[in-house]
Amino acid sequence: MAEPISDATREFGARLAKARMELGATQEQVGEFVGIDYTTVGKIERGERNTNLHNIIKLAYAVGIDPGALLSGLTVKMVPGWKAAPSPYDQMRKLRREHGLD
Image 1: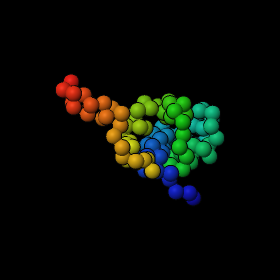
Image 2 (image 1 turned 120 degrees about the vertical axis):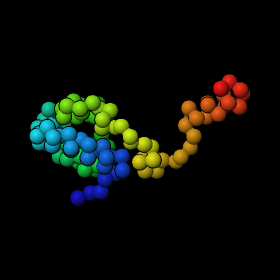
Image 3 (image 1 turned 30 degrees about the horizontal axis):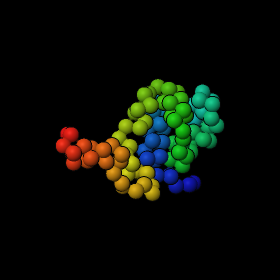
């Protein structure tokens, strides 16, 4: 079995799996409803697959939760290879402070 891609995919997948199991649904049922193969659902749940936005929305709907519940609390620090540079938002706030606008 492959390793999770990242801490973010691992946590996302664990949340999806928990919601699916609480519903009493199989990976096959969720996959059929969403339109993806059940093996892909398994890979997503194990964090081995980084899915796209549309599938996140469809998967959340399939297991009866808000898509935000799958994503809440995930941070950029959970994404491998991300360089901790100031965001554009942080850069603009700094410029505003430097010019006395905040």
